[in-house]
Image (cartoon, rainbow, N blue to C red; front, side):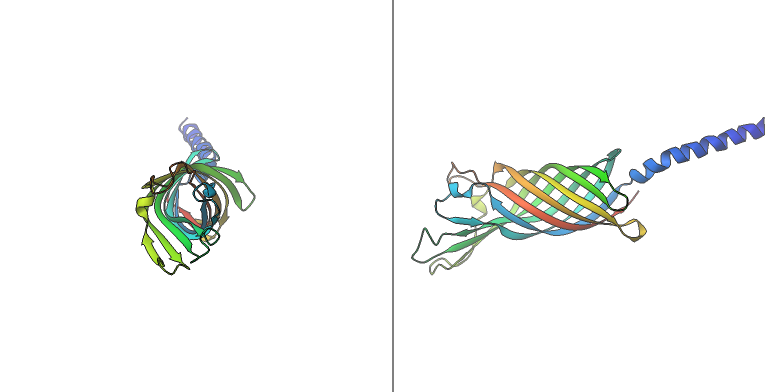
Length: 224
């Protein structure tokens, strides 16, 4: 009887291990960091000034992330990141005498909280993600050029709200490296849900919501 009892315990432990092993692999908690670039502009910016040419501005981003298992292929990925947003303005058609251009860079600390869904794959794992992002404005700088009277940098933080709220979606992949590390390139799109300008600095009827395209490359690894 004792032998049978020990045998049954061994079988039970073996079954439990094989049952929980796949879940343990999928349920790893991951941490990591990422760097990348952004292309940003405003939605319908011509409402701000008719005849002015608006274009995307390049920026920089960097951050850290935590990847938490929820259920099956669904995970939660909160992040903290520094991100530059902005836009370029060319008003030479509006002011032909003393042409001027403005490059605006707004720097934020942002906290996105993504729901992440794995699409699987034999070797490289694809995933989709999406969720809200709230940001705090650290600084705003406007660089004026091609104007003989007001060239140079200006602090324009008072022209923008101290926060931004966006909804973002993205797609990426996890490429396995050695020792459990993953290389993670991700492409995201952010669309603002609140106006970023601060009336009356800019026309109160404007629809100046931020929009951002971001490409990042990151490294993640398991901690549990």
